[in-house]
Image (tube, rainbow, N blue to C red; front, side, top):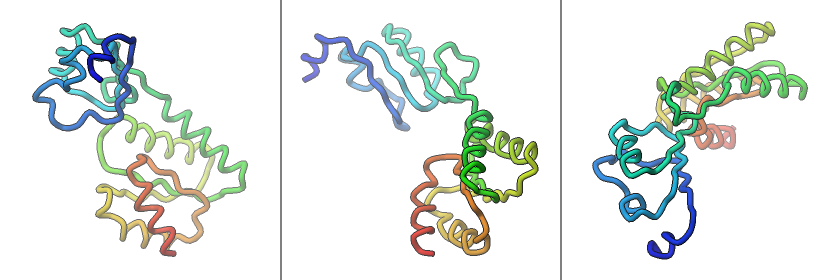
Length: 170
């Protein structure tokens, strides 16, 4: 299969590379990709290896905001669009479930949420959910205590499973 892949132009799209950057993946060593789009931060050493192998790489929504290899989003505008849509649908009280971390997108979503709420004089709650899986009880208890919340916004998609389980338990 690797030898067949060498005959065609191809771009590898990766959601997560993994935690072991000790060696290049076989797809790069075997010269089977022409470019990579990856949805996470990658170490400088790995970026240098990609450059050395002449493999273009675009990092999407990563923390290297000033890198020519990066594409980022306007998180505040995205938050504003989402909140305005929910307001148009009749939602009036909001909650942000904030996952821990200092990734620029999580920080920007948090900041954008607070700014949009403040600018529009809206009521809101923030629940800091710092570890996926371990904070299920906090999410469930929050939902029990705040049954007037009309919309919940997640700062990171890793929170979906715990929220879904908690909502189904109500």
